Amino acid sequence: DRKIRIAPSILSADFANFGAEIRAIEDQGADWVHVDVMDGHFVPNLTFGPPAVKAFRPHVRTFMDVHLMIAPVDAYIEAYADAGADMITAHVEAGPHPHRTLQAIRATGKKAGIALNPGTPAEAVDYLLDLCDMVLVMTVNPGFGGQKFIHSQLDKIARIRALIGDRPIHIQVDGGVDPTTAPLVAKAGADVLVAGSAVFKGGSVDSPQTYGANMRAI
Ligand code: DX5
Ligand code: ZN
Image 1 (cartoon, protein in one colour):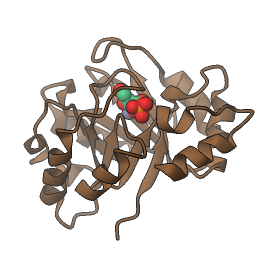
Image 2: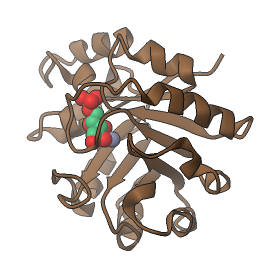
Image 3: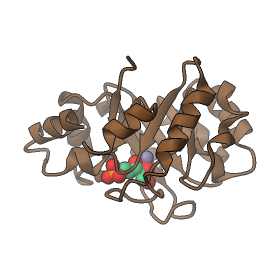
Image 4: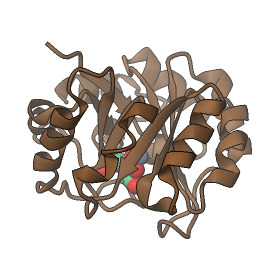
């Protein structure tokens, strides 16, 4: 009954052709474009600053879902909003004031998401649900694509779905989502599935039809 959306992560795309890759995945049926921002501090990898996200913006026709794996995060919210993010998701572990962080994201007029690392309990969102449009459940430890799905998170997804009740809040699952794990997370209550390696594997800007086949298999 719940519509399942696929949000390919461009962390697994060709880093020399982001514009073409974004157009290709959207032509092939992507619902959202998931942009993984990493600062080399909160996570052991470094990716896109606001200028890069601004450069992606004109190529995105669907919805640019920006996942901030950065800490501290508040100082950068406005810059990613100005860069054109449609949704800004911050990590609950990024600092002592996730409630204020969500208020700051909402103040920019963008959709607000809160992300939980695998070790963070579902109850961490108890006092944040009225301020967010989405809860992102990490099913890998953040920092890289192509990692193995952490099955213990399925129970957390179900708990969060119960906490959400009938509020219009998405549950996004991110990390190790592929044709085998996708049905498990959908059954547990997720409705937005991020996939990087499972979407981009075996394809290229010259053979984008593989992206479509990979997305349909999820
Ligand atoms: C990991 C990122 C994920 C990652 C997903 O820190 O947040 O979005 O790119 O990649 P796969 O789908 O390959 O696990
Ligand atoms: Zn992500």
